[in-house]
Length: 162
Image (tube, rainbow, N blue to C red; front, side):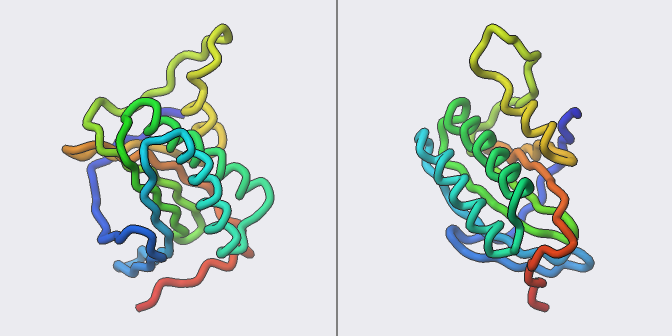
């Protein structure tokens, strides 16, 4: 699956906060965290996503997939952008969004052909395989890479306040 590249849209997000928003038919709740450009941030991303999934009653394979996607996206920022990143996990309608924004303006990431002789280079292939869709939103000072997973009907996601 090829990434979708879209134009930026901005939401007022504050670090470390639980978020909710209502805008027309786009109710969503989410959590956001800033992560430094260090290898340990990938593990922190897993813990962050696991916590959000637990809060919303999302467990099992979906939570595992969400954690793996978060790990890959944050690891890419650490390895390639080398900047702090903002990670947002949000539930919107019937989907779980995982989004990682960096502050390094460069061309959007693309999956490389898989080389079985290399130990690396499969992260975006995993993101593509595990998500229903993924893409990149470009900004003048960086980019956001996001992935979407389907939420189960019994997820206990609170609705956004109106």
